[in-house]
Image (cartoon, rainbow, N blue to C red):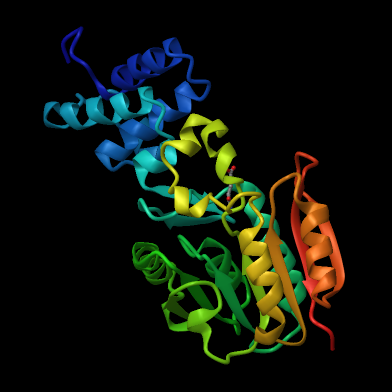
Amino acid sequence: MQFGVPNIGRTWRSLRDQLSAADIPTAALDAQLLVRHVLGLDATGLIASETDPFPSGKLAELESLVARRLAGEPMARIRGVQEFYGLDFGLNDATLVPRPETEMLVEFGITELKSRSEPIIADLGTGTGCIVLALLANLPSARGTGVDIAADALVQAEANAQALGLADRFVMRHGSWFEPLGGDKFDLIVSNPPYIASATIEALEPGVKSFDPIAALDGGADGLDPYRIIGSQARNCLVPGGALALEIGFDQGHMVKELLSSEGFCEVAIAKDLAGHDRMVTARAPK
Ligand code: GLN
């Protein structure tokens, strides 16, 4: 190869420098992921083809993805995929990007259900389906229902269930909260509802505010509207002794705990995430 011809290694290094100059802290990783995305290479494939010429027909696509990254779009949105609990979840415009904190709900659910045979799970506001599908992947006899008011989210959740080989144990219901569940009773209800107070949406970091769907973030005037609905109706949809696990905002623990206690739930507890913030409230329906 002639000196100066952009090979694949040189392309990603110059891209890394460009992202780094724009103060993107994950510049090296992002550069590799973008090049791999455009060329359809895994990590080993990228190393193996370092000295191959970068295909000129793919340059325009790479440049447009780089422009999106430089404009602040998160990598998960650009690649259309986010890893969660060790599994890949496809995203679309109607779904949040799965967050690592949300893995706490999966941990809780596995502990709660692992000794029950054929437990059934409902995930309210399922989005990508990440919570319920990660549970199904780890609980071989479990079945799950994902509810979402956004029909497009359900299309994505179904695609993810198919890709993960979980579609035979997963059903989707289109509608608001408990409305599409009929009279079913569940062993576990999980939800990462919208919980940001409407007036503070503007203050969220740009990668969230501009790229995550507002409907998945906006929890009403104080951010607690979904907890009021879930708190008042969840007991009707749980088996006796069934569990509830809700993601919450860092300052909502006490309010949500009080709300669930006043609705007659037992064992109401707040759990902290790895950053030390209140992040989940769990509770049990009376036996
Ligand atoms: N945790 C999300 C954030 O960082 C909010 C998710 C939600 O409202 N459920 O913005």
